[in-house]
Length: 614
Image (cartoon, rainbow, N blue to C red; front, side):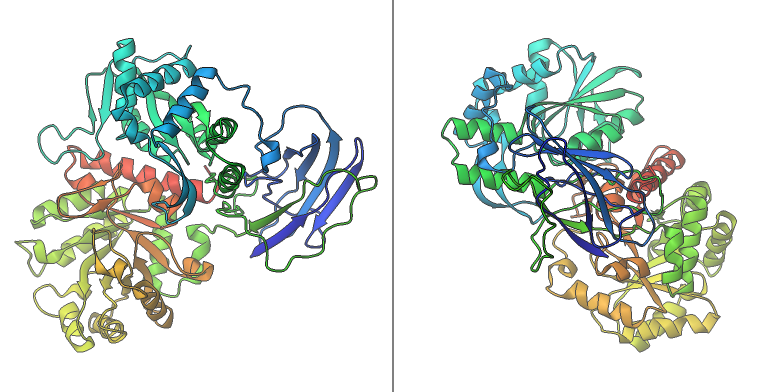
């Protein structure tokens, strides 16, 4: 349910108290609210916001009741002459007196060499931004690089650390400059471990227990920082501080704090804009556009709530409604005071648990999967892409306790026999996981009946899950459904809606994913989910279908064959997928059991964060 609430004329004189109710009766209901910004407040807490004249609105948030989307705000307005919060208009821009002169000089130099650009830019996420930051250009300007190192060191004065590690790649020169200036040793994190040699993810000399200072060029949500922090913590290094040149003010400080990281920033985007405006490099209109963009595009983790089954999703934008309800009447005595009203778009949408969603999934295998995930507390699927049956059986038995699904490619196993399927099924029953044969069927209905139930592999005799392309049309779904009747077994189908390989046509073809979703809706008794890079469709679709994402490793990157890797947190928390599919990160590891445990924990922690329980 979406709720559009308007808070109008909360601009009372000193000591005037009032109450605002939005959306009807308000007592006892939950709200995730922002007044003048898109940051979040937890139930039972107070949010303060000041207007241009220093009038402070204090908002107390009520408790949650699942499924109800009504907003209740109890407000007190007080006059204050203290400093203001993040500005929302050009008249609010301060001179940046709290910013060091050396920082002002650096910001101006960064603008002059093109590291800060203003205009209209399409970011990697697809969002159009009025500002673009390209700090890679600093490598061509030694004097600027030296200033960057000095500024970074200034803000971490007093912080103890034994080693430095720059987040690849732009921050590597920054870390190097600090290392050369201070004599502090560096570590280097690879974006992906080598498949040969030592296969290290962290390069350099270090000892367990040493303290590492992470160096980053800029932060938005802070997730790229954690992709460097987590591998080092896995190596028993102590990592609790990150120093960054530019904080875009889009949630990194909150997100990093939740991961026991303290953010030390040289400059915020807001202060950088003030400096450039005051120096005449940016005009009022450009400055205002950037400030509004910052406010409207925060990426803040969902807050923990006293009610575990209710959470509010982040606001990615704050559009004005096409038709708005009439504003609340001004509080007494407020007619001549400035207005600090703000139109707020709320997504008051319940994030369901795996357990909650069972009732929405029609296919019995899909419901079994959600049961397994909930009871074993795992959303990990192991892609056992090995070519011998002995290796597959050993791997399945070793990591079985950590997984909810074992994904196979039976046609690459060189010694597959008629008893291989049963051997796998026995291990699956022992450790309570499902078997997914990744056959990717793509033929007409009559052909796939034979491919799935006959031939050498007799897939539907032992597999619980199969998958198919939607290119042949809905006939392939009917064919696979019939193939399951031969052995009187329950079978579930995943449709390939998106793929993780670079340049794949499934993602490139307009309408492909939408048409695949429509086929699944019409056959939801058999199709229970998708292979995709994240959740998609309506909120009802996201409750009714299970989304599984391949190409997952502990760090982003790719291989020489075009496979693109993403992290468990990105897949489960940010993209709202349900299952991570991990292959080489586990079966090529020196210790597959430990690797599987680490992936299971990373995936499950991301899920707990998503539902507000971590």
